[in-house]
Amino acid sequence: MANSSPAFPRASGMEVLFSKTQIAERVREIGAQISADYEGKSIVLIGVLKGAAIFLSDLARAIEVNNTFDFVAVSSYGPAKMSSGIVKLIKDIDNPIEGKHVILVEDILDTGLTLSYLRGMMLQHKPASLKIATCLDKPARRLVPMDADYVGFQIPNQFVIGYGMDYAEQYRNLEDIRIFSDNTTQSVGFQKNRSRSSHSVEG
Image 1 (tube, rainbow, N blue to C red):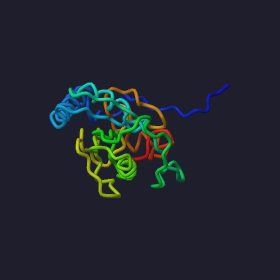
Image 2 (spheres, helix red, strand yellow):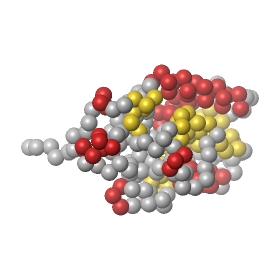
Image 3 (cartoon, rainbow, N blue to C red):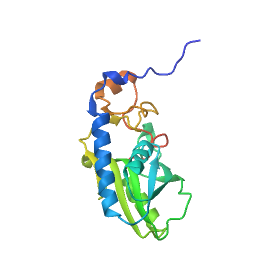
Image 4 (cartoon, one colour):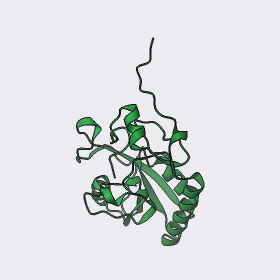
């Protein structure tokens, strides 16, 4: 019986934007900065599923001060797998953060809609402080004012995969970050905009 599932292009044919070594070095730098900023304190890292899971895991190990982590999941719905801009909470944090120092951890700060929503939601829990760390920042896509306190890399308006970031749930396991080009996307017949019910709503 023929398999009607689309054939995804090989990652080896995609341009590497940031190598495994570059990512690891930058994560170490951010970890050192956070460790200095929170010296003598404990922090809670809250990752946005699914895309930020690997970045959060590496970052937690690079931070020298005591840290715990939790996760949230959000989604949005719209035609043709495009974000409607309406963010819906799928999974809330499991543990209270009142009076604690919190860092929201995202894979990409993109439109700013997700992090704006999550920031407002987290502030309702009355943390002692709240900051944002993102692996990638794509300022050209911003729809609402939003900045991160800790940024891995700033990138142009390009669709990227790897290091937790997906295309239709594929490529999350790549150790580097690669560009998913227009030609590649068209060749498999998919929309370029991720459905954030399977990824996470565009940050």
